[in-house]
Image 1 (cartoon, rainbow, N blue to C red):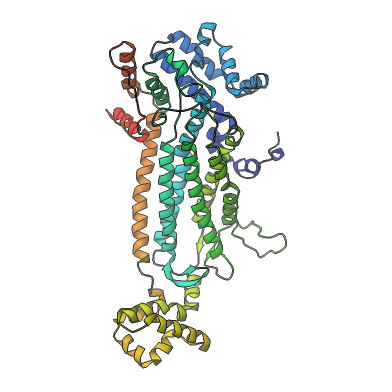
Image 2: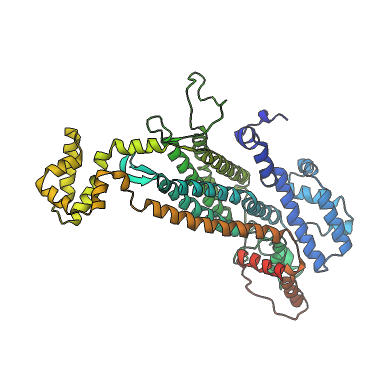
Length: 523
């Protein structure tokens, strides 16, 4: 099939058009990847059966081998006959094993135990392995840019008009802080993605026939093989409570909005009449089919455009929270598009990082734009300094001066010094205060200091998160039996009547559990 026969531009223009990006995301967002994650959920069940001796090692080996050999193509061909994708997977596996072993395939599960858990798991790993590292790379680029220009004066703008000076580094540091906060929010939502092994209506009906005293413990055990936890109250319907995915989607959309806002700000600063920034482009890049001189901020425009396309998907996520009774199918088709959101979001993070890394900063243009209106922008410091000298009606006096200065083509300070009363107050000001009135480029407040402090803070936070993500990946890639020993001991004790069943067995904080496993590895 030709890629240009596809309908979705994400496939042929963005995700599919960049081989490196495609290969990094394909193991998580593709339909073939979703099949692999479903297979992992089903095999986790068999591993638990084997360890508890609910099925023999021989039968477990047959099943695990069959799951490893079945292909997505086989399953989707079988679905054409059954009309049910999970039952198609089960059928394909059971054909490859003995009748006795086949009884254990998908035992106690319902389809959404498999699919919802697989969905949470693939997004959990996609965020850990790809998206969060890409966001941290972007954050590092912004930190470098902010620190580099911590002292580069720039006119601040409100309502599109000149306000008072800042530094360019300060403008970028604001995005460092906003992005850093969104990254932490996204990581929190990732940690809170949940799975379920609770059966057709979430009440453990089928599992209760085997181990009524410890259904929740068994669910936690199977999910532990995947590095996951059930809902905090270990309660569900046929589906995992939808709020966990909704929260993740909101965290993504909120972060996406920060990227779009940054891209839009940079785009405006690239305008010909402002020219403070310029996007780096190759010598062969064409900006117009008819105007050879054009150099457009294309990357920044595309990021905002993709945000516009995917931001409304949040409405669908909110609507998908509604599922009648124990479950209906009205969220099935709509949820299939969720991987597109993560793909578009990460694509924009990578593209924005690349564009920001090559951004050309014209400090001379920043100085020129600041000085072009310097006679007006000293109005605020003049008013504040006069007020501090107890000058009556300081704000109103400076406001009138500003209007007169515009009408007469003079500077505010020229008119202020011509006024005997104001001149007396100005003479009382400290030398460094008077310097600000003559050179507003010095009126940047705490821009430089806040820039460096914010960058230092997020540098530390980013390093901590990078280290944790690497450790989590390492511990989950190694299935040491010690990880599950406590749960197995509890289950066996309950089965043997040596311990009382727990009426309420709350899910544990996932990160705390992961960190406990990290300590086990060190021991």
